[in-house]
Image 1 (cartoon, rainbow, N blue to C red):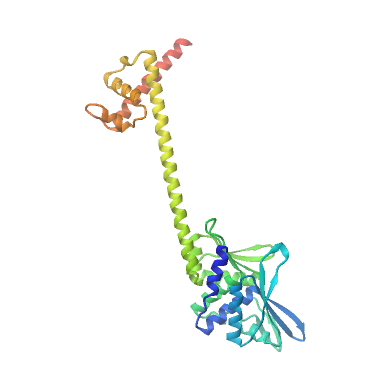
Image 2 (spheres, rainbow, N blue to C red):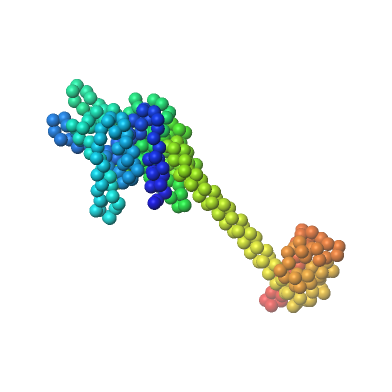
Length: 321
């Protein structure tokens, strides 16, 4: 199973004790994955579809517990693109669909007529726990989360611009930075930063998914740190090797033109050591001298040798010209 499917399975096993939280979560589930079917004479059927069997069982239990309605869960195979099965529940007008829709804030009765509203049911979200329950239902009904090995991205997909804006604002009440974007005729509320994805998982109660994501984040951070250290050490090693090769070339040029004995004693000593110990570091070269000198002292002598080699090269070039 994918990381997103595992997260939904975890959330589907959460059943809050408070009646208000159950109703708030069911309201989000119906809003995100339900469709209305008008059958005439003010009759409305409600159909709820989900691809997650655990989510289907949760919706079934909520409807039975909250409204004493026993509905069937039908399994359908989605023939398009050979997708997995999806689970469908149909609640007819006669079974009490209007009662449910009014309770979850989707239908508003006005002058003996019904209006569909796309706003959040604010009357169901007066408590902090109910807001968390609504976000949990919204994720179960229309949310997804990317595999954290690849990227940090959590989103909710809804068909209503009004609902997407309200959902974004509800998420941001928890000091998050959710944003919205239109995609293929739908509206997407998304969170991208790793810390914020962790926070939203904590808010909706996906604690196992949160720990799994944090473990992956730690692993990725350690891997990135190791790569940076290796790259830094490789760069330093390459720099050291290039410097050593340049120093040897300068000394060999002096040796082949005027001879190393033409150098002052201090420079001649370090030149001999560099030729004999080509892979030694500056510190190691300094320790071979009696009395020993530090890295800066060795580096100073090697720079003097480089200056002498450049003057010889310029002199020879002028003679050639």
